[in-house]
Image 1 (cartoon, rainbow, N blue to C red):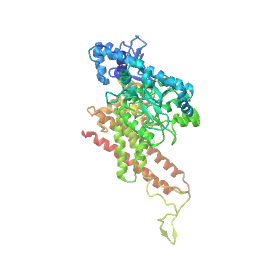
Image 2: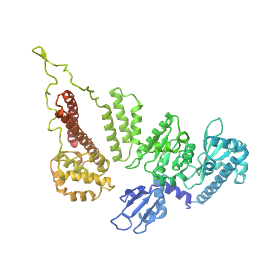
Image 3: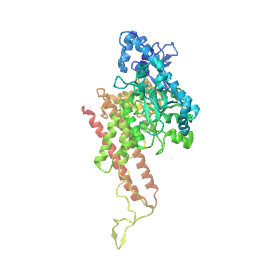
Image 4: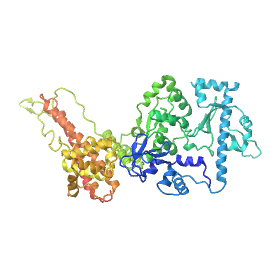
Length: 629
């Protein structure tokens, strides 16, 4: 069997090294890389690093170094061919057949690269000739300098059916057809002819900088405006990104990668000094292209036009990306002004205008929320329920359970806030009561004394979450530490009345902020440090508050879901307590009584929401025994 270097390179490119090693080794994110305690020798301080972009691992302690194949042979103990077959099966690649044709195919691919290089040189030469004047004028009109044209090796396909075929006759028609440079008519007797005619030619390169295809833009009127090479032995459209070879090193310096819609957008950004931009090839982003983007940056910025087509492209990209989101891996979005593309913006406002937009990209969750909220009118209960259903379906499309739950929680909070009853607007100054009674021919004094207390002692708990609830919550977090990472922000806003338990909460959240992995013995170490192991053990054994996440036999997915919801409810309850306390303070300092009616009505609204949080907590406790939830 002969495995060509090109085929092995493709196998490595389709294998995410951190995911492969992460199956057996606990990894921690370290900037653009991953780190871990070396699996090849015993160590307590991580010195083993993984670089997905470059596709290798390295240990600074013992010197272990290699790629995905080396990992399978050295760590998993597989023979070379068994390692290759297993990786190929996971990557969806077919291992070359065990016959001499594999070597012949590899040699042929190498020859085809040479043919594409010759074609590129031909197109560049044609652009510089007299008949290339109109093409050069077009480039100048688009603001593309001669230096940019040289950088991107832009050329011209003459308006002829045979010029390229004649110039590259030494390569033979068969190779030119295989490269997609010639078209073979169905009638066998007819001669092949040039595919690209009268077009500005832009080379498309692979990650190693080798020309594998062309994009041709028509000069003048006609359709299609852009014509790409067909898929060939060299060119897989769904896994290729224009300018990837230049954007990869630039992204390491800029700490970002930008996705725009077309070739000219990439070239325009490069002219403004922004080289870390790529573009798909006339289609929506594919899963393969997304995977390559995430290797460059876990949060690529998608920069689409502000028109409807651009917004649809953004939504399609979200749909492709959702199943593959993981903690820290997402997409961000920039919307250009209506009627402008990056080329227009650069020419009108320069790099400053572009950087102003790139400085504040929109998170994926925000873009998805805005899209669904604006999709249909929300003036009926059915429509509002439809919005919630669509958002829930998007969240459930995410394979990673922690990220999926975080999206469900975020969408639930946004929908609740959007559909909450509007608060009554108030006018300043004293008002007459519409219900004032008459006595002895005159109205009673206004404002009246409230007929019920502004807040009960149960509603306003200034000291924080009660010990029983706090212990139950911490028991769940200790059992399911991944929930701490997903809900660190919400947990940071809680406060427990028991000082020891509150220190546990603070330490757990602080560990997440520091990037520590809360697995294995990490949580136990924190508990011992603050002296809380006994307290939690007692609660775990006690017949206290019944939540599914307190039970050792509970379904993990259900337990994580309910634990996250309990956190959300407790945070909302804490916020309501603060608002009720604020209303009480306004009532206390309102010496002339002008705000009593407003305070009473506002307090009643807040109390209603507060009772709803208590009701939901009770439901979650009652559902602890429902095995079908």
